[in-house]
Image 1 (cartoon, rainbow, N blue to C red):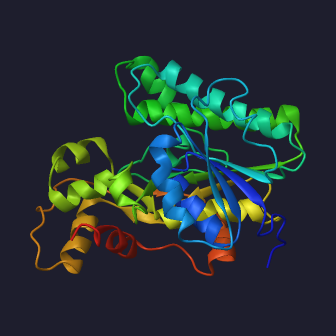
Image 2 (cartoon, one colour):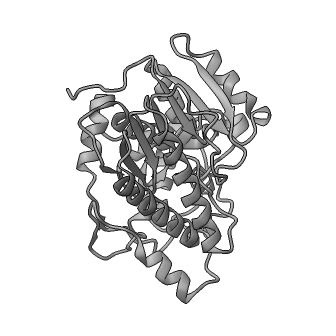
Length: 338
């Protein structure tokens, strides 16, 4: 087994702790005995998160702290004292009509986090949540490959030609430019901590606190296949791609946080390919008594070849097993809906 450098009892700061991925990261850290300081924009509105974790773990503590605007210089200075590691999950998710604004927010938030950590000698590890879309868009029915050096330059090219495009195009450009800016900062500043990035693909799986989190992020896409509501529109917006469970995404953050063997790496969280017809087939198998929408014609398959073996290797270090498959992930997610 690799050498552990961040041991249980250490304190880890997790930004965006109330989101789908952030909450799962907090959960996995707490159950392993790490204390967690989670940031949200408004502590009062997110007290339910502290209440959820406080009654579940006795061996580790969870503290909720407020960072109202992560783009303000110095915004993390009051929350980083005494921590040993930093996981930056928080990110603008949508609602932007201007790519420059989205990129500015993403980059500012990332660099503010790095600068805050550089001033704290106790911080030894930093993990950034990037995205599969920071490497490439899905490529349907054609052979295509990405590698550890791939970035989605196509996103900016498309937006320059078609500035009215929004949604995933702006998100892809923002994640691409943010990750590149953070690697550049690391190269120029050479701080006293190790930096790694996790690039998760589409997340399908359990929502920890459905009452308060609803159907966050990509979970709503799987919900569309379950209900049939907005499924046609969803399949027009969302191409077949690769997926990963939120638990595996969380553990892909834990592994580079605690193990010395992972240094300056991009970990590709691509468990397996999926499309909506595969999802519908699994739903029908798991819930034969329920009526689901008919299969959708002409969906295609994402045939992108991805460098995910290293990510599965480090996942096994912390989990003892490989990727969760699509049936397991959808089953655990949909049990709350049936």
